Image (cartoon, rainbow, N blue to C red):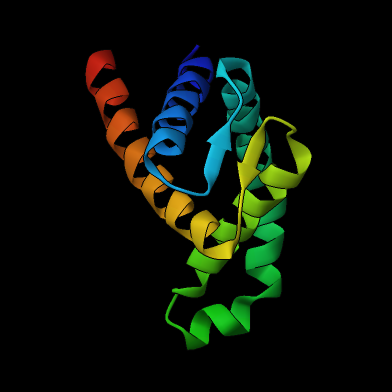
Length: 115
């Protein structure tokens, strides 16, 4: 149940950010839910592999290269989901940073309700 709520909250964040940021578009609510599921799957499968492969760059930049990895995850989600469009790398970077902030805030609210 908690995973389902996290996916719905991520879909809500995707819709809000698509309305705020230029260069990011979502076709509808179903597309936003699919984007949330795809991002969750990419974060589980592809992100650890990318972090491992780019470990030297991550260490040299003191972890800031993780932002680039997050943008790559968003660009991959753009390629995999038809109703989700990101115009370029910078839009994906800003989207990933704001999505992380929104998700942490919303997941904190979710954790407070369970206690």
